[in-house]
Length: 106
Image 1: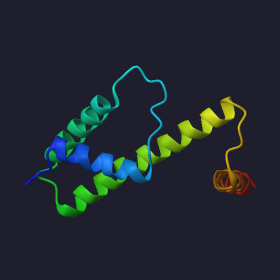
Image 2 (image 1 turned 90 degrees about the vertical axis):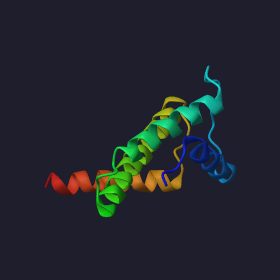
Image 3 (image 1 turned 180 degrees about the vertical axis):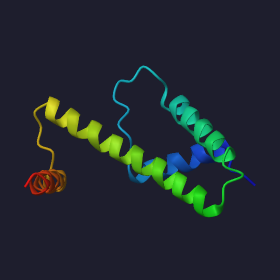
Image 4 (image 1 turned 135 degrees about the horizontal axis):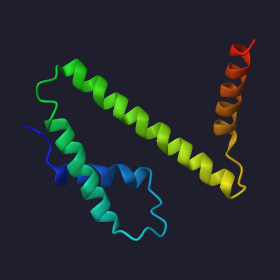
């Protein structure tokens, strides 16, 4: 039985209790944004009915990884735009990435 958008929306809200999203001053109601995302993800999951379990998992992991990366990039851009420090974890990651670029150039 596939998950329904309203069930996914409820799960999203539970997750947000531990890690809230800062919707700032977006001109859209938070609940409508959650619902839109839940509907889109449920439609995507339904379109994978013919996929093997492994292919479904890989697809969902790829989508999740892309979204986490996009979120991290946007967060870093906002911090830099506002002249705020990115934090030790992010700074260490950026330094590691820069080091990797320098190693490849040699």
